[in-house]
Image (cartoon, rainbow, N blue to C red; front, side, top):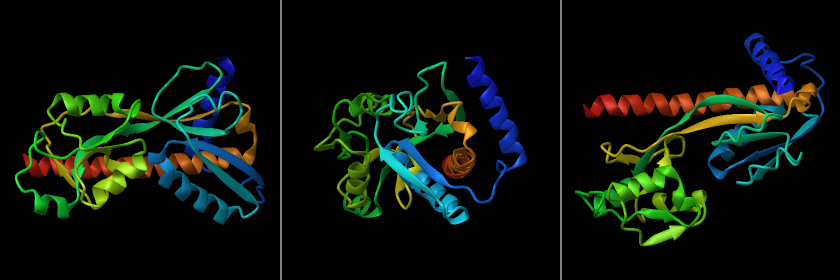
Amino acid sequence: MDVALAAEAGLRRQTATGMPEPYTELSGNIVVSAGEGFSSCVLEAASRFTTLHPRCSVELLITADFHKIVRGAADIAVRTTHLGEPSLIYRFIDRLVYGVFADAAYLKRFPGLTPATAANIGLLPPLDMLPQMRAAKAAGLDHTPISVNSFAVQLESVKRGMGVAVLPRILAKDLIGLFPELQLPDMEVYLVTRPQVLKQAHIKCFFVILEQVLIEALSMRGAEDYLLRDAQK
């Protein structure tokens, strides 16, 4: 526990002062574990990192297996759940805000939608038990003609104008927010790693870059959310 806390404190000091030293001539591979919704952020961080350090490489594992990082199968993980492992560093990033979204073409075909009349693109078990999905269903968004087991497929279905869906706002680009009266719980976002991993300069450098990309993405959608709320008052 003390080792993890000391390593996290050192990382916070490093983030405040800039990239880890030595910053040049880094080499090595990094394995990142993340859910589908964070793939674009990890890829953006990987692009920035490998451009700066062409002798480095990044592997992205799209998985919901929270235990990979404990077993050493990944160096860094993006998580929305704090499992409390004392041997790991949990770096809180921000909160992931959810809403109900649809494509403009769908809204043109079905004007005057309500939660009860909208066709919801649902998620199959166990994803349907996420707090946001259960809250939306309890609020009346329970007409679900199509269900899928992938967040990426759910998003693609909405973009094709097949219905509405409960989505993180960071994924809802070019989509229209609906039913602002629905209060959907948000989720905390963490970067997780092991203290011994951060002793490697190339992994520490990538950690800092990925953290910045996530902060940018989450704060941008948060700002848009506040603007949307203000406009609806």
